[in-house]
Image (cartoon, rainbow, N blue to C red; front, side, top):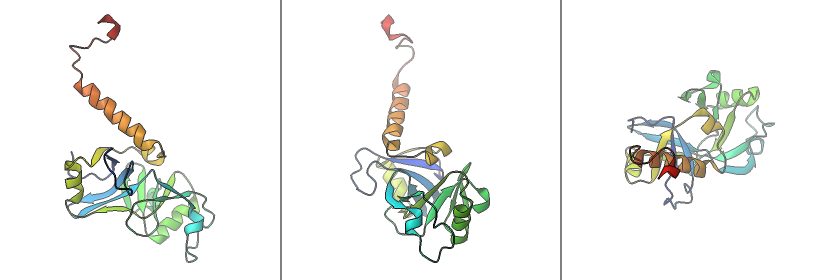
Length: 184
């Protein structure tokens, strides 16, 4: 496992019973020795972004995108998007992150490309995430832009199945199992 998991996806283990994280897929936006910050990708709220904006926000009151619950920690409105010009951090190639109001408004104003808006985030202190991963609370896989922007209700189960298939492939000895099982 790499030292820095920024841009990786965390899949909650099937045994995860914490209602904040049960069956979640989290994109790690930031990870270093001081801790980690991630956004839950597959938990949309019933609220639209435009309905959640304070009056002080100039742009965005026409944004119809669903607001997602990014995690149990409170924070500013956050956005994952595809615009390098409105970015604070490039999370992975083609996936950018912003929380600064002027950058978020720029993304809202352009309404170009793929965007995801979040209220709240998932946060870990120094060493906490690493301990949880070591305790098998999370499965880790490399993030892909299509997985991030295509995340929906079925993402967790689909990715868990994919990981299970890959694990099974690694367990199969190709010298024992023929390409055509009917030849057994």
